[in-house]
Structures are given as structure tokens and as C-alpha cells.
Amino acid sequence: MVDSTTQLKTSITLSNGLVMPTIGLGTYQLSNPDVHVEVMYKAIVESGYRFLDCATMYKNEELVGQAI
Image (cartoon, rainbow, N blue to C red; front, side, top):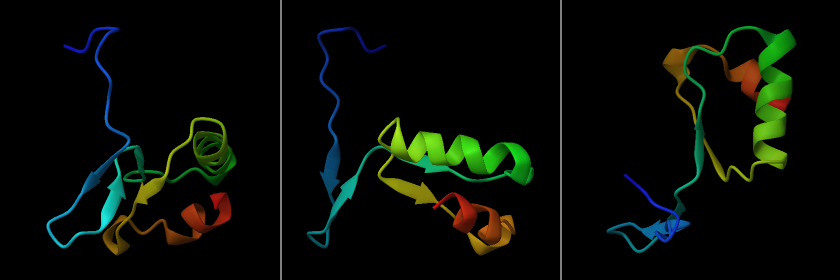
């Protein structure tokens, strides 16, 4: 459990030295463009998400692209 005094890391350093943000948005099972494009856009812009967890197998590349 995280209490109000705990500070969360905003990034981590990977074993290859690259820095990866810890705030990300999963895109699995997004399929309704009328709802999800707006929700993803707001999450990216207003909530500060720094990366999107995407995969070709999700078959929603066009939807994610519209949000970006």
C-alpha cells in the first residue's frame, strides 16, 4: 500500500542504461474509436502518460495512432 508520504519514481534506468518512464498507458482491448481515442488523448495530455504499451497483436494500431 502506498501512503501519502511515499514518493513514486517517475522513471527507471534499464540494464542497457536507457531511462524509461514509469507512467504508461496500456492499450490492450481498446476497440471503440468513438470513446477510446478521446480517452487516450486526455490520458496522454492531461494525466501525463509518457509511454503507450502497444503490440501488433492488439490489432488497434490505427486507433492508437489517431489518439497520438
